[in-house]
Image (cartoon, rainbow, N blue to C red; front, side):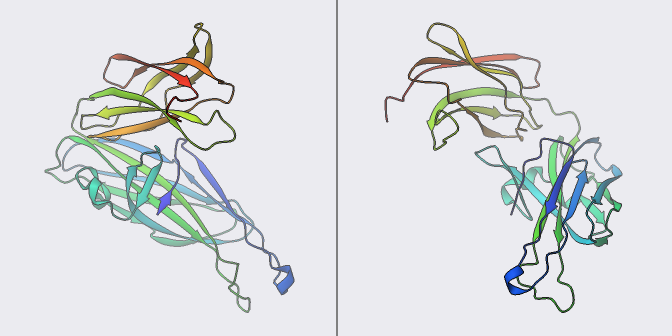
Amino acid sequence: MFVIGHLHNYRKLILPLLTFAAAGIPARAQYGLALSPMRVEMNLAPGAQRNGSLAIANDGKEPGRFRTEILDLSIDKEAVPQFEKDIPAEAEYSCRNWVTVNPMEAEIAAGAQMPIRYTFRVPAGAPPRTYHCALGFTGLTEAKTGQSAIGIMALVRLTSTFYITVGNPAPAGEVKEISIEKFSSAASAGYRAVISVENSGLTNLRGAGKVEIVNETGDLVQSADFPPVVILPSRMQRLPVVLESKLGSGAYTLRTRVNLGNGEIQEAELKFRLPMTNE
């Protein structure tokens, strides 16, 4: 399973190889794979075809090899993207079967860049909605002739996510609930707010707004942007917001003000006390 965040349009991962000096195996240089863009959005009509390309690069000093996979996408309850070869629950919104890719496997020279070409073919009967899928790239180091394979093989995984909107589905979303949860974290107050957003429509939502916490005297003690995680269609999505360590014992109010893309500014608030009374 791939578990990779993708809030940016560019991602670079370095592949360090383990050194086995005690076994007499010399260290090998690193190679790094980079992929761009990390997210692609398209508006296509039923029956349409669209060609495009990604760029994958090896900015290391050794050649590398990669394989391409066509993947389904989901977002878990921690708001983390999950990439797998088949996610049955996403079947109604998957574009995985619409895409062909070239190459599916290739070597890439040190310091080189190559295009990954793709073609999407939308079925003529595709209902209006936003579909999602991804291309995953797995880099694999290969043992040199005469060397032990132990410890010199590792994986790098990169993904580029595709969102394809067919027709003009209207956004429909609502902040349904805010709750406070305790969790283990030495770097925070040990609590997080969870904002639950219902996407009742057939297209993606992304919230734009603020999350603020004020104390009992009305002073602002924490402020952050509304979590920018994509909210996929026809589901309830949990969006965690970690509470800062400076929040001590006392009464607080969490307020959120957000536009979910449907032209409305929604406001919601929750009054809570730390430590939680049910601890």
